[in-house]
Length: 454
Image (cartoon, rainbow, N blue to C red; front, side, top):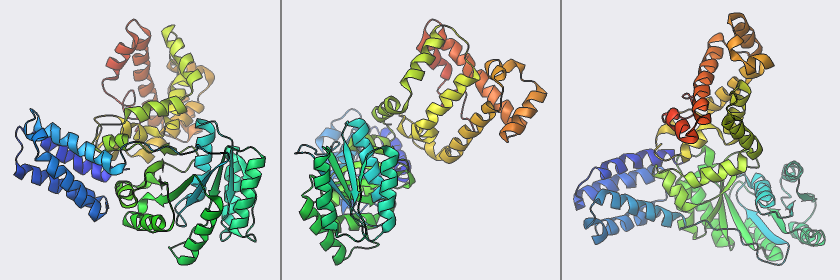
């Protein structure tokens, strides 16, 4: 996400950093570029105008002109204004109420409402240790009820049954009573969507909202809709007392205009963003971290949190202990590291959060990278246990057999063995005195170890 705007702003920032003295003229030139970057990213025009004017006033003020590094001072202002535009800080769900805390989700059809209900349920269960129940009052799309039931079973939360013959208000009233009897902490309600905004839909969602009196009313918006997302958000905000927004499909949105516009247009915070199709692909929205990523400064905090959540701590500790004891790094170990990286979203996801890597995501085809990870694992799977422990025994005939078994070419096997040898050397440095310092020096700035696996 934000690749378009990040690339354009990266050039502006580079130019600003080189300015020893800032004038009204070169500030205007820079802001013209920022304005074009925002418009190309599909940010709403009123939002762009206000954003640019805020920066102009501050950039021409005393705090910049008296700075020893005026270029850096302007970049700081751009960062602060971007954080302010998106909502200052993460806005958590308000669950401080008599159980069950009710969350109503609303939005247009196709925005990903039902999947988001499941993602929210999983997030609350796994991160906040809540007992969650879900229900669908979408009586117009029978598949919606079945889809939610399937997802609820997948993530092991309670699904409250409903049918297309029931009135939506009766469905939610019954669901609240059942959730209360079952001592659920949270009840998430999936409402009906439409292909467009109409009065019938709005009247129905108002009835449902009045019956539920939810503590959270979340608008689910497809970030790839751009300006249409902003218009839809405005219409729903006029019809319902929204408490927040969830951006979906951000992994497929290179522009990011919706993220930079929705909060300003509705006045409601973006609380979460969907980053993939899996039920685990939901992350809290942190404006400061997003602004940092847009400006090429990385997002190390999110990366650390992701490692803690997705990395297998037991395997990691076991692996570190093995290296400290000076034991040999094997192809089985190599495969485990590839799996850990895939679990964290692959190389593209890592690059997006590393400081100083603007533009690298464009150079790295994330899809291709993930396919290569799968290929490398297939090659290792085609080896015997002895070959994985002692790759030195792999001769020409064995390479041919491994390539045939994994559906790859002999040169693919050779490339894997070369990468493994490079990584093995680095691991030796890690196991010696000086450990991590030697290991990082051996990395030589490469990501992943031994260079890209493609």
